[in-house]
Length: 281
Image (cartoon, rainbow, N blue to C red):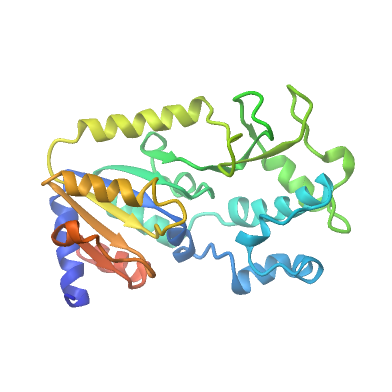
């Protein structure tokens, strides 16, 4: 394998020469930015929940079968508060923006913490395919409208007692009267509203207008939902002579054999890589 600095310089040259940059962002990017779902951060926010329910991390705890809506929303209020509203701008996302802000770029992401918007990426250049912690929907998807939840989340956190929110604060669908849920793609009831379709169209239009050299900058994308970013990026790299795939992934950096000469892989620290590239601007 090429030495680290050689790969850094090779990737930076590809970015500099590219007419278009397509960022593919998975959970590993947010982890690199400090939005960790395990360890000290998890324990700091969820100490009491860990003691009561035996939770081990924020990801798996999201599948816990709570006995009531009051319990469910007490947990999810804190989860959303911790990962959507109590984070703010992060250095890694800021550095990524600085790297691409003068380029024709687009972001395809499975992350749901809203970080690309929070850090100033242009709205029309983002497609968040899997939803957003900041939005509610009908649990059964009876209609395609989404509802911002910021005020509710703050009030739920404030008024949680004994791991429950007050019964009168449990959200109900304004159309069917049923339960509400977060707008996260976890089943076939996920709501794709008008904004989702607008983002999808923006992404398709961006890909269709590409005429020249382009880079797929894939960061932190593993095999949880590889059919959204990882596999399509590999396929488009294989099909285009003008494409380069730059893959940053601590666990799965390898290229497929067919793209070996068109992929530059890194399993090193994301922020260290971004710092090096920014120092060469």
